[in-house]
Image (cartoon, rainbow, N blue to C red; front, top):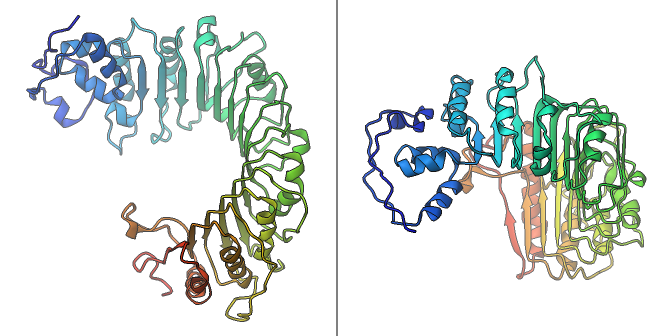
Length: 493
């Protein structure tokens, strides 16, 4: 059945668009004279439901049809942008606007409820939260996000609101800056697939109560959960595929028997991988000192199916050895290293990273980021005689990018080796600094360089590219050199 064209001549006064405090919305004088195609009501309703929340509210100001549809809008996202607060606002009228919107939605069950106090540092709205969550947490809710500002008073998330109907429908739960204390009496969260806890006060015993009742869980994200001292994920988490652990500073033990864990991201912790079920691991992203050498020596045997390996090592003192073990399926390798933290640090041989190329016949992309805090290695301009290694054919490597490229001899040797032996190479990007440039048009300023010495070394790296690398580049390889910016990186030129 086709509907009549929605009435678009309704003035804005008294309609829910008053939730928006933009000047052009509050005048109440603007009338929309354009027309909407004569579409069936179910199609118009569907279009309205897919609109972002702020635009959906504006449409409700212009049409009685969309006003009725707005009152059935099941995805509510509250932040500065959707509420219409100025960027500099600290939250004035935030609560009153949310209250008015919720009063228009009392007759429906929400699918998505997101509340984000981000950008309102120190703004305390905890006195309203119990009432809002009681409204939002009804059977049918699928996604709940509660991002609070850091305040002296920690909000205690009310697990009592997780009724049986809510636990059956809730799929995504994200909490930030609050306390979560589930108990063994909490029933099963049968549909929960993604759990994100960020600056949340919770112990492992409490988290275990939650996980033991969340057998559909696929993603677990923990960031700065400072009360967790050990983590032992049980084998009953059959569907858990992704684990992220960042700076849970009290955490000493990470153990996982989840049989299908395929992606693991960890920062701020040393991990004993013998306690982690790694057979199905496809992606490992780890930040750990002196891990580059260990990764080459240990990972091929314990993670035979690894496809992506990302290593962030704040210090490397041991060159990578040549070993017979291989990464059969490894396609993407990214290594970020830093040198010069210690005045006694010995030279590091970048050419030893060839060991990874030999071990990964399927490798397609290589990304290397070097942070040189002080010169440790010999410069190519001191001894320009390059070492030569036996020729090998790396038939899968297509893209190589090196950031903070400098004039160290072993780094130039690594690039020259790749250019001679990576027969399938298509793209080579060399960046003597790091990051995007303002001359690309996307950013107003380039990434800053804090030390003049680093900029001077970047200039030497650029000269090394011009002198020793460019002449080795085959015609089939596209070479991109990101030069320092004459405006943002003028110091030291």
